[in-house]
Image 1 (cartoon, chains in turn blue, cyan, purple):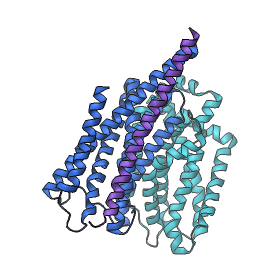
Image 2 (cartoon, one colour):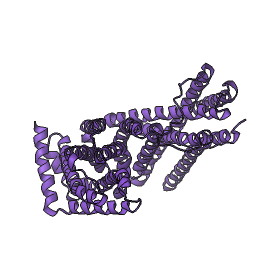
Image 3 (spheres, helix red, strand yellow):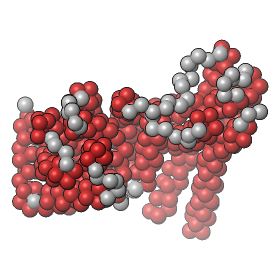
Image 4 (cartoon, one colour):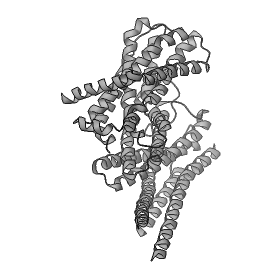
Length: 225
Length: 224
Length: 47
């Protein structure tokens, strides 16, 4: 319990510092003005979401290989937290884009594949609710998770090729592109903070799943008696 | 090689089972026709519009039809309880998948080739000059749909709400197939047609990647 | 500050999503605890 509280405090502390840095340490961007600061939150959450999905992929592979329920709990926790991260990305992106570019959305490679990634992880979570038997649920959702993770880079590549045929505005150029050194430091500090925060959420969700598993066992025992 | 000969025998079984009643094929073909007709009401089917939207709607119709056609793939085995027998009959469970993928690709291709002249007539596009290229495109696209669709059919057969689940899981995963096949087909049906080799390469890569993933993980889909 | 509303909205909604997620985890934990209490009580009754 103490560990969880310490983790929470560290995570929230880091995020608070990172947000402060985004507003008061990072210099103002020349063309866009203050609204560019959304980028620190938006892009760092996107990176944290991608790491989370990678961990989910590894957890899925480990479950298929070892069949220990802990890997299933980790995969589920990562999928939920990852979906939350990408939701934030998909919401903050358009809020930034509208005042700057005049459009909420464009179907470029990065946005489209992010949207498909989000949909795939919602499908993963939905699939889990439709499978009743715990071991079957863990295995089949892990297999779907593997398919989904492998598909996303292919989706990105296919849409990027498609976009060479039908060019469209590309919003939010890459994070490293021509960043001022102070901005870069603030950005990477935000990336660290969001990773720790995502880790905290994953830990809490994992703990919930572990508890739920224990309660299920108790229930089965009670029914058996 | 035992894997291929087992798969070959099983493909024969799949095709024979389907051709006994032909209900799946005939229903799918009519469904694709209905989808194409209904979709065509959503835009003005003049010649230039047809060339732009036609191939996209054709592939969407194929995808919808496939996501319904693939349902019985494993459900048939479930109701007749033949999956255990199949697993005992072959050493490598991947043979079962290979057979179903081959059969499904064949059925999809049949449906697409029957649909092609109808589509050409309804939308005034010509394709005769590019027939081999179109065949290649349809084959690679159908293979991609079958590989991923058969794997997901194995998953959804074990879940609730399977009629809705299979299309739901399949369509996002098949985004690359849809995007690339449509683009290649547009290029093959335009005024100066040509085969977009990079698109073909992307489709072949998609098929190869997922066939490999299924080869690595196939047995787990069929676990009891 | 130019576009202050947008930055404010983005941060509020963004953190709102995370907060709602955390709330759902907390609520599910509370439900689990209630379930454990219920099980304990029924086991106690049996004895």
